[in-house]
Length: 75
Image 1: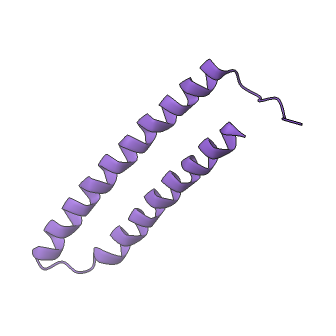
Image 2: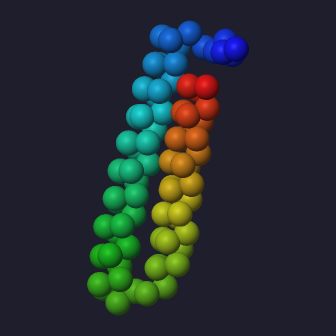
């Protein structure tokens, strides 16, 4: 037996659109982080590599969590 969804179709579309905008913001943040990190690294600052890698992994985790939530929304 199919379980009834908590949200109506229009509500799910609104949530999915909001998640999409958040993902786009996180991706832009990651691109900026990559650019700033490469600029610092090429300038001789190697101390920034590990903090930037950790911040990038946090962004990946946020995007993964949003994807997991989106998949759970469809069930």
